[in-house]
Image 1 (cartoon, rainbow, N blue to C red):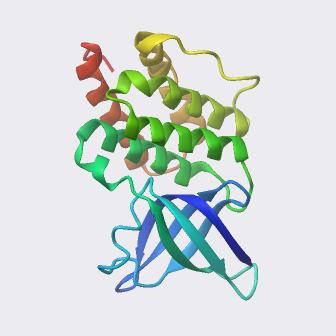
Image 2: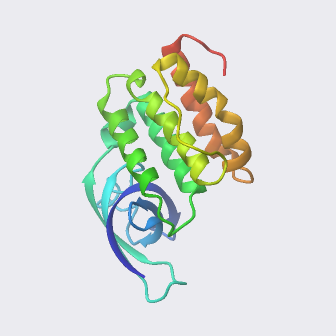
Length: 204
């Protein structure tokens, strides 16, 4: 496998002393996994941050071999990871996507929407500007993986987005994350707790 594309960095799992196994969502190739030598070193540590936009080059001698990946940072989400609410949203979206999408299967609409949601999280003054887009992405993810049909409904206003966010908890847990480790869903629970401070409701 030889591929080069821009992508959204989703996750980094430690491997050996300094390397990571990276998962990157690209528009053309779908989600790709690759071995990043020195991924935990000083030079690459700012690159392998979930949500970052990267230029990725992956090379492998055969389709059965884990590709070696070279990454170049295009856009960093690092500055927003010090803010509790944006950090929780970015962590949830990237963890969910890395956990449920199959490798090397293209989902161009999901890529486009996820990038737009991440841009909104980092650009809007509050969650009122991006929560509707976040739940739209969740709905599209359920649909594209076979657990819903039709187009995503229009979400009007923050209260409607919160209600939809709560309603999607069960189908995401039951269908998308069934059999996975609970720490993925705990990222959504943390996001809900932080969203409650905006909505003024503490019910989850």
